[in-house]
Length: 51
Image (cartoon, rainbow, N blue to C red; front, side):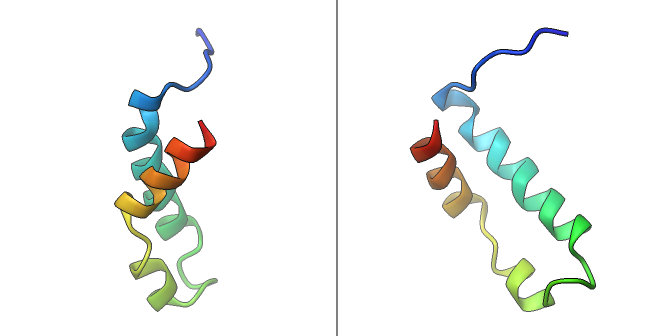
């Protein structure tokens, strides 16, 4: 396994994993409305900023 620093081109995939994992991990813990309102686009923008 090779671990590397994230690149801007990774942001879309990271965002999808981020949203999907929150929706499954926090189901029945965090209000459903909050989880439904998570968007891939907003998380991608966040990850572009972070990277």
